[in-house]
Image (cartoon, rainbow, N blue to C red; front, side):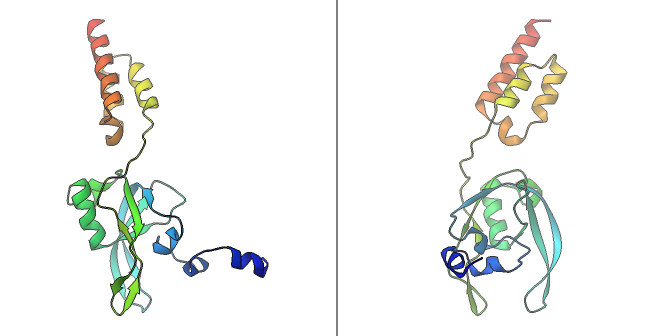
Length: 174
């Protein structure tokens, strides 16, 4: 890479180093990011000064994203946003990340990732779910299909209407 190309690329300096977890530097110049947590776990994390901490870590549905340490501030936001006190209650529910500039962490000022305190507007493709519901052969299949849908799809008015319409059709065919 030439020196000219290096100066034209605007990236946060931290992107030139190997950081295991998603951080504010990953959103540099990109704005907010909507993500959906897939699973969570506890992991021992060793800080820059060798301090070991047990941290809550989220893995996201997007396989191209790094995992993210979820701190107490972000947990409180998720509890308020999605309800429930357990991280299990927040899985599969979208959240919007942003960089909060100028947060004091000890003697340092940082730009950490935070979770917006509102539910992001997410467009859900409900067509596959509606098509599957319309094709249900009997009430048991209809129930299985509907119960197997993600919660955000199940709560869509079009999906509920398709389920109810197919239920009426199946009941009248008896």
